[in-house]
Structure formats: C-alpha cells, structure tokens
Image (cartoon, rainbow, N blue to C red):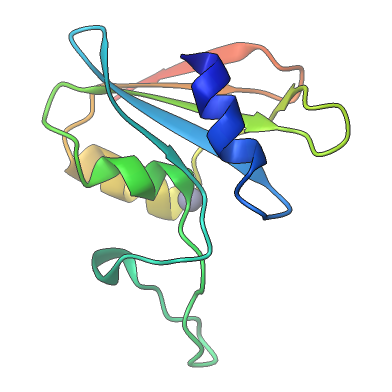
Length: 118
Ligand SMILES: [Zn+2]
C-alpha cells in the first residue's frame, strides 16, 4: 500500500513527491499525490493575482474525507527516494480540520512518523 502511494508520488512529474493516504476505520479510502492540476474548490490566488497551479497531495484526498477519518502524508526525496518532511502546510491544515479529520500522521526530516491530533 505504501508502495502504491510511493509509485504515485514518484511518477507525478513534479519536483516534490508527496503522497497522502486517507484512512477510515483503518482501511484505505483514497491515495492522492501532489499534481499540477488544481480542483476548483481549492483554487488559490496569490497576492499578486496569479492562480496557484498545483494541488497538494492532502487536498487531493480531503475531498473524499468524512469526519473521523485519518490522514497520512509522506514525502519522498528526489535523489534517494527516502522519506522527508511532509507536514501539511497551514492552508491544508485548515481544510483538514474543516473536513473533520481527527488524526494526521506525517513523515519528518528524519523520515520518521509524527502525529497530530485535531
Ligand atoms: Zn498544503
């Protein structure tokens, strides 16, 4: 399952390879990766008026989230594919808590898992 998530992330054609896994009662509901495409609901406009042209992996799966779900976010480094910091950014965090997700696990700089309870 992590292998599938990694595969998705590594073939997304972007500099950052991030995969997010949405779980419900321990089962995988959805695996998402960061993409160049953006979903209308998560469109972002920068202060200079340009639109953000990417979607974070978290955003990709939050659309399918139900209250009480859990989220795992992992980032793979480009060179050796080891895990790196994948803590959701503040925009994603806002959407994550709005979706009612109760727990987030993410990989830190050392490739270890950390946990945030909401
Ligand atoms: Zn984000």
